[in-house]
Amino acid sequence: MTNTNITNFRKDIYELLEQTIKYNEPINISTKNGNAVVLSEEDYNNLIETLYISSIPHLKQDIIKGLEEKLEDCISEEEVEW
Image (cartoon, rainbow, N blue to C red; front, side, top):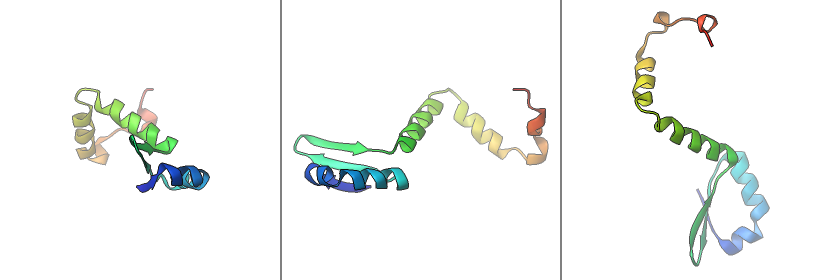
């Protein structure tokens, strides 16, 4: 995570945002009234999706159970009815 204060953030905003987008490196911006964190849109969307998936009861256990399945016991993608 990149740490900066608000003055340097304003001065280098373009470069800092480009780095955040390109490398998914969050920026921690400190101010007199507290801190703020800037994330890339990709990281933000991934975080929201993770929270959503985590909110579904038993889904984590189902995923772990599925990972333990042998590949030869699974059906092919063509056989899945969407």
